[in-house]
Image (cartoon, rainbow, N blue to C red):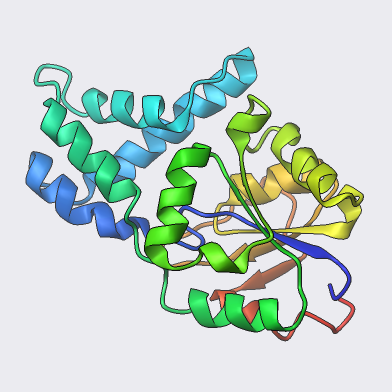
Length: 221
């Protein structure tokens, strides 16, 4: 992987979504609703992808929150609290060290998210990660969410390299599947609770934490 650019997913891969659990505990008394909410967000962007309709992450996030309790829609304050939580997620503990080592080693690092450009800028700034990436890219630039091919191909275009010279790093099996279909190499980060569908092509590499990338860099894998 030494000559390849690393394209890294943000939410769930670099940033810990479980930090939203206290919000959902306060909102409806159940922290587990955070996973239900995120599954709904994902379902709606996948439906939009199939239908050729693109809605930004913020719109989907707010609509999915309302869908948790259709008879008691969230207040403006509750929506604002959710979005504030999304833009202030902490990095997983392994992330700063791994990114620092990769950056120091001359590895090209790109962040690629389904979130909006404005939101990801806030997220990376809050988590102290904004200085590690040569480019921070949003799917909104191409009007298509991952796992559609356009975000991955856009990242390769921005870097001026072929998709085969890029490695997608993500903690979501659907993201790995999409990147593989677009011609990228892949690394799956098996974050706690993450699963990998047996129906999807296996990733080229599987690691437990982001610093698992370090031995892969420079070994020609």
